[in-house]
Amino acid sequence: MRSFRSLIEQQIAKARTAGQLSGLEGEGKPLPERPVETNDEAALSAGMRIMAEAGALPEEFRLKKELDAVRETYGACQSDAERGKLMQRIADLELRYGIAQEARKKFMK
Image (cartoon, rainbow, N blue to C red; front, side):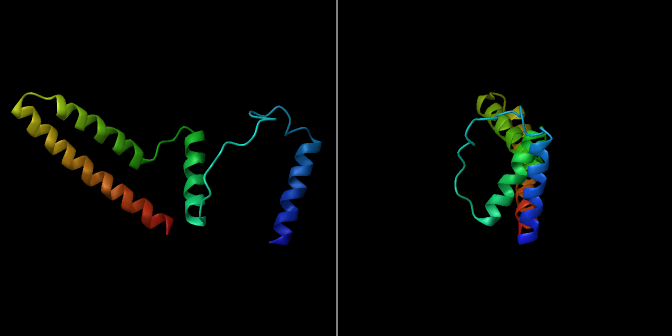
């Protein structure tokens, strides 16, 4: 662990000397507030943050967003036939959302 830490320090010093750490976004500003996390939560948070910065949206989040939209549409729907179709869509999305959540939990173990 000690050699890994010194390697990191060397890389940071090298980048600083080359000027690669100047003019970065957020330079001179405090780091954003983040809650204290356990090791598992820290790994998940880091992964989600990297994906968000890259503009990627995990399947679980996409499904949740779509599920919320369909539920809203269902609430405003007047037609029984349309309500039936929307209920089928909600059931399908809930199933897929649950599978995506379980996959993430299993992956993060």
